[in-house]
Image (cartoon, rainbow, N blue to C red; front, side, top):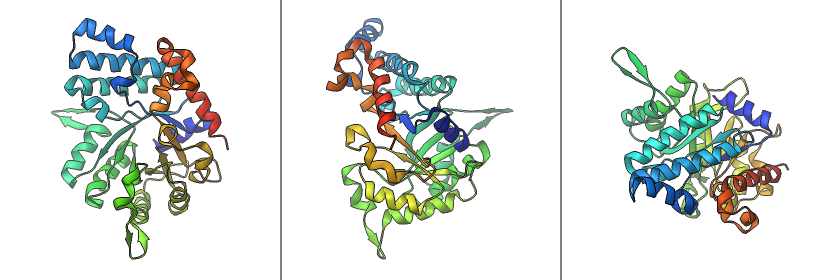
Length: 304
């Protein structure tokens, strides 16, 4: 799957992933009113509003981008109906030919990680049938439990041609409380980077990159430069662009000399673009067109 991601990035000349993180406050009022009018003030109505919002965003942008990244928490907050819409969104995006990165940040003891991996990027056997759950192409993984927690995901990557992005240096302000701690003179995130190399050494695709990638925040460009050098074969998923402060010019060192090696995420900067002054002229009725323009502008900003 890493080969497919790289192929799409090259074909569309857009190292961009759209984060489908639909808070109700991002969804135009007319969509919410219609959903609650049909289903009442219920979780089902909220989930329906999310679905209509997601579908419009995807329809407006899929031809420009290689990938989407739905954040599962934004769906889980609406209970079972929300999780059903997460699955429906994944399926729809795959029908549109997009690579789907499930932002699920899973990681636990081995058997639990194996179950997470089976549910999100692998399969389960029920009687004589092999069935798949959410069917993302990549997922994000929390490495805090070490190899015991990560290896089950790597095993599924090999078996099912899938991929993972391991949290290495995250974009949030307090990430340094743990990730920047020095251990024998090295930051903890450097040790995690070493493990990313180790976990991914048998998962390198024809493109030269591994199915085991890394999450490194756009808000830390100096660390990004160091980590790019430390993980030459790992694709880097870069959150923190736009709304969190990251700019295109800050990200040049997240990429390799071939122009590949990183894919940059923007969530509310795209899906809620119509709320920004720059795109306010589109209005809430044309939120999807505003999202498309935000994608076009982001692609241009990333052409160093």
